[in-house]
Image (cartoon, helix red, strand yellow):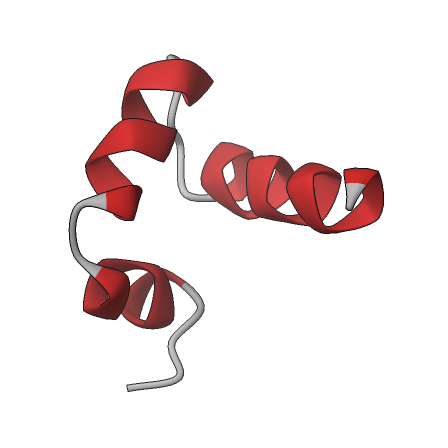
Length: 41
């Protein structure tokens, strides 16, 4: 679980996010946001 969390935080950092906690909550509200961040969709 920690490895997945670290990977998600790393992806957010690469996207230029400075506030990881707020970005995590923002991403959690809509699952398609995370897929778009990873350029899957």
